[in-house]
Structure formats: C-alpha cells, structure tokens
Length: 139
Image (tube, rainbow, N blue to C red; front, side, top):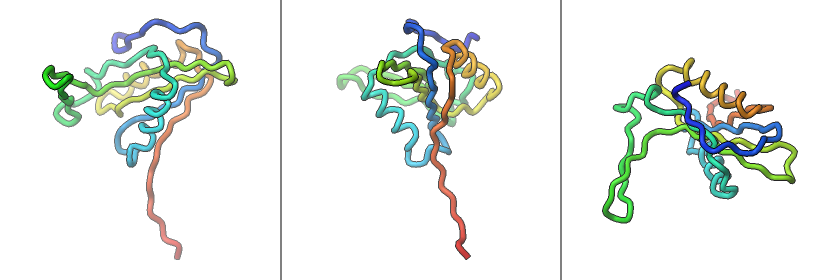
C-alpha cells in the first residue's frame, strides 16, 4: 500500500504483541497516548513503519502544528501514525507500539494498512488502549 512507509527492518520479532493508542475522543486525559509515549521514551524502540496521514485527515479540523526549533527555524508537525519495535530477551513476546491519531477519512483503507503492517511483522495479538468515562445511576 502506498500509504505505508517501512523503515529499517528489525531482526525477526518473536510473536510480537501490538499495543495501540489512538489520540482522539477515546483517549480521555491523553491516558492511552501518554502510556505509549512513556514506553517509547523508556525503551527507545526502533521505528519500523508509519501510515501516511495525507489521505486520512481533514487538515482544517486536525491541523498540523508549527513549532520553533532552536528559537529560529520553524518545523511543521503533521498528524502521524507510527509503529515502533521493542525487543527484550526477558519478555516472552516482543512488543510493537503504535502511536497514532484517529483518522477522520477512509477508515477501511486505514484499517487495511494497519492490518498489513501487523501481518508483515507476524503480530500474535493486538491490544487497544483506551479510556472512557461513563455516568451511571446507582438507584
């Protein structure tokens, strides 16, 4: 698929478990994405793939952000969807972390790209992190 970009491939992963966090409505207080960002910072995993955002977002709703680098040069940050691989001989399975922004368009195409990446790395399981809040009555 043209929406997928692969990076240097890791050695064969051991039945990796994919842990997924989407930013968006189901990520209350950024709890899921913060958990994945923590693991990315802690483990320094290798970036193995990403799904290009161009086809999946309405950029008037999910705008790219601009930030200054070194106080002078501007850098544009687009919504992204990245996969990172972590290997640890002490774990039974290797881990693929997915950190992304929930798409606004072409869910079928996005899902097919996501599944293709999971299949390429022979994922044994996919676990979605999310947080939701609901009210209920006790009476």
